[in-house]
Length: 149
Image (cartoon, rainbow, N blue to C red; front, top):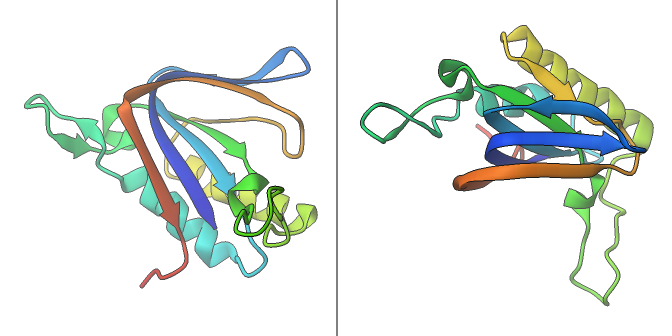
């Protein structure tokens, strides 16, 4: 499972002209699922996201998590995180999980974040979405559940 984490001042996702999720300060997450992923991968990354110390304290150091900073989460499904661009000019998406399984693990990932007390807004799984954000910093990180302890 892969998650692109972007610290933001605000973010929103729009589907067919309607806003389906919007937050102020917090994290925009682009979430991708591959074939081998399980609930263990989803929980690992949800816990990692919730605990990442990427918000500044009073001294300007990145010492606070999104939870401690009182931020929110905008989680957007993103199968293209598993696009393989090594051959040719068109990405191959064979590493992305089948939609039903990807949606199940994406939903579980969001449930774990909510269970930790975070406000989680979402896009619409599988839809064409317009995502807007003001990246704060900028701070952008790539998390991958493979290779976890």
